[in-house]
Amino acid sequence: MQQALASTQRGYDLLAPKFDRTPFRTPEPIVEGVRDIIGPPRSIGSALDVCCGTGAALYHLRALARDRVTGIDFSDGMLDEARRHVGEAPGAAQVELVRGDALAMTFDREFDVATCVGALGHVDRKDEDRFVDGIARALRPGGRFVFVTHRKPRPSELAFWLSHGFNAAMRVRNAVLKPEFVMYYLTFVWPEVEPLLARHGFSAQAFEGRCPRPFERAVLVVATKRA
Image (cartoon, rainbow, N blue to C red):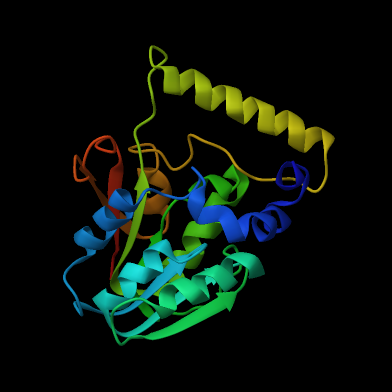
């Protein structure tokens, strides 16, 4: 209840100690799918995890990177959990955790890979261009933005009605209560997200069926920054 009444940031501060035991944590087989599509250990120089949460993706990125892995999140509570989690990760890359706003990142051509796993629903529609622009600026030419999404469900599917029902409830909540808690489904869905990525200099490719059951419908998108 406290999380539901709080802002997005305060809600995650409260949820952080138990987050990895909740359904909101991206299932490990999906995170491993992101890891595998990026490449083998030490195949990249540096990596950025945007809205890193408790460090689920950072744990794997550390083994993939030779030099540096950076996680950014606006929740001190989530960063505290990530610090403990990533400290146990294999690999020798330097780990940097930054408290900051994913919509106001100042990184400039510093990373070979950027990831975002399970947090895209916290980006409001009006902020999507600003979010993707920040990621594009953080990547070197040829760098990749790798994220998890899905295809838009059809009206004949239960997920369609559950997602729209949840979104409607959140809009009512945010119209009545302040500060807002930004969390919506049906964002960054494939292939509708392609024009957004193209506007910021990315060419995108989607990979489906890469995750085991029951997660086989997850879509892994690799968006490559054009030179």
